[in-house]
Length: 278
Ligand SMILES: NC(=O)c1ccc[n+]([C@@H]2O[C@H](COP(=O)([O-])OP(=O)(O)OC[C@H]3O[C@@H](n4cnc5c(N)ncnc54)[C@H](OP(=O)(O)O)[C@@H]3O)[C@@H](O)[C@H]2O)c1
Image (cartoon, rainbow, N blue to C red; front, side, top):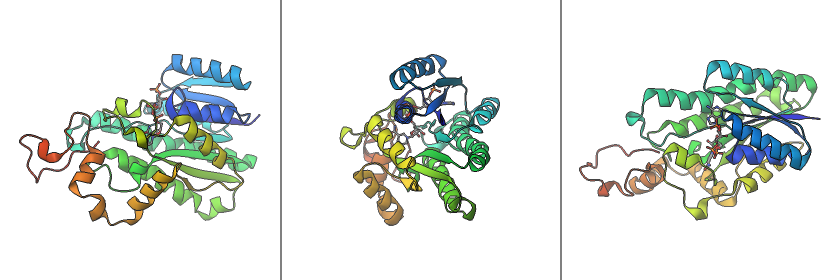
């Protein structure tokens, strides 16, 4: 049986991606920090889809935990780099430890696991890697915060690798799953306001489509589920940055939970003050 390693598999998008892979017969290694949530997910997925589910309780922001995960990644036929987190505050107002943790989780961990997984995939003659990214990495939508930069990094790594000569002639494919808002605990945990319901996608819907394209003979390098996010993502890429950073638009896209909607409503805040980022 082919085996998939899914990070951040205990809930949210990772849990949904795990189910979509199990539905196609993949045995799974489910990785996150919360061992109880992983155990429950493994029990339910294993029984429902009749696949073998292992769990790995590891903190990917911890170098030792990441190295243990890298050992598992060497055996994976499919690697889903999904674990990630946001930090809903402006860069100048965060604790450095929180920034370091987020960069380790969103940038170092997926790069390390991808690096560990590739040689085995090449040798075995099959491999698929899904790097879960965000439209926040496609343009200046999260001004002044590191989350967008971390996702830009992982999208860019995916693209640079996928278009490299070695990968173009290889049986291994790397895809960036570029997400808009999804109905998970992501925003709450990052200290961000809940996203507008009309713009929020269901994790199962996203996962089903993502796994379908990932298992194609030639998966896309960048996949953006939902037409509205496809349009937004292209706009972030191609429209002038000056337009995408008009103060009201940028502030609404990037404010954190404890901030008012408009900069002018914030008492004592001058027009010159940089806009806070989510
Ligand atoms: N939801 C959205 O609107 C949205 C939009 C764009 C992109 N994304 C991306 O989608 C991915 C999945 O997020 P989600 O929406 O499903 O969020 P979520 O519900 O908060 O799930 C995050 C997952 O990552 C795991 N995780 C967090 N820190 C970890 C660590 N240090 N080590 C190992 N695992 C860790 C969590 O489990 P534990 O806490 O048990 O470790 C959980 O399983 C992320 O990469 C996120 O950036 C989400």
